[in-house]
Length: 101
Image (cartoon, rainbow, N blue to C red; front, side, top):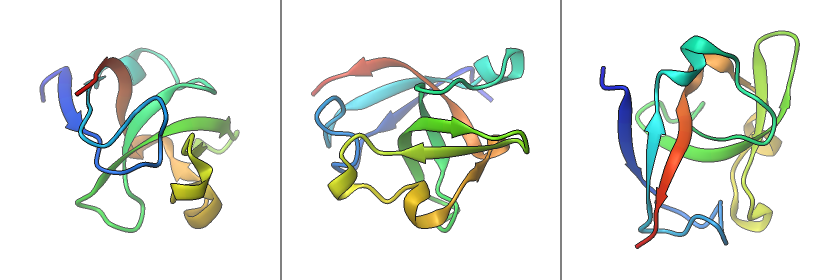
């Protein structure tokens, strides 16, 4: 496993900050050192489509090791409002660097 991984933004769910075609570099090791925090932008496995990765912002962390994640562009985001909370272990990592197209 590489500590830094590149992901391409595929949809409008995080506009205006993250646009389709942009790339992000994701720190995969950070959450081995500490827990995720509210407000952080993360890449995670889609809870319904296991081969798909999505980028979202953490809006709430529960005591049962789950997070609620939402897109910044709520009109175009499929997020915890649709699929419920996600397990912390489904988070790939924290967005570290944003590479705009």
